Length: 263
Ligand code: OAD
Image 1 (cartoon, rainbow, N blue to C red):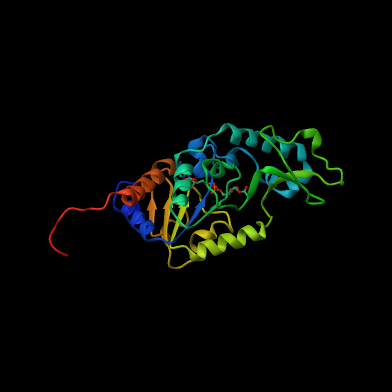
Image 2: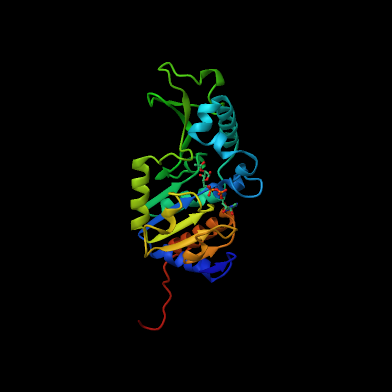
């Protein structure tokens, strides 16, 4: 694996691979939203540095203290609502526009990819737009203000919980199946803003496809860095627009009509 600060030949390598690609798969994590002002989980200032995962992101934590859990998710939902998609989210949406077979799988529950215009989005860990009943599985959307704390109990005897995946729970089966298939058929896989330590999502980067050109975009090294074709060491909002601009510059360049040596 080679490293690149985004100015060198490896960026050119990613662009060349994308030019040839018929199918592209992108896996994102919380780092793609960092430049929208949303904290990551494990970095400096990350959510899991100051909050206890087992209290806030597990079924057991929710059973113990649903008000605490909802208070936290309501705050996060409000922060998502205040945040705006950044140049990285928009660049991913533009990439989709340029390709027939494009799939984005995100671990994020912040909806920023959808707000940036991405369409074929697989939300691996669910979304913070909906609540689901722990008993009857009914769904209910909730808005920017979150779920009112006096409405946590559902009439059926269950409780409304955020419709997201917590530690110890399985990913939605259909979403996971589609993500695996998209990763397997891709010619290029871009892994953006994830520490690649949470499975099974992290497996999508390198475990389902032996021939794709895999590029990581992350300012820091991760456990998959030495298994990818190139690691672009920069931020998502810097690197992705650069890559997409280079691709579209080539696509829209006028044909060269100059007369040259015969050929
Ligand atoms: P992490 O906090 O584990 O990792 C964030 C990654 O983003 C790190 O590798 C950073 O180096 C990188 N990063 C930071 N700023 C960046 C930027 N501007 N551009 C690009 N990359 C940047 O977050 P995730 O990998 O998303 O799951 O965590 C995966 C899962 O663990 C989450 O979905 C969540 C969490 O616990 C559940 O809650 C089930």
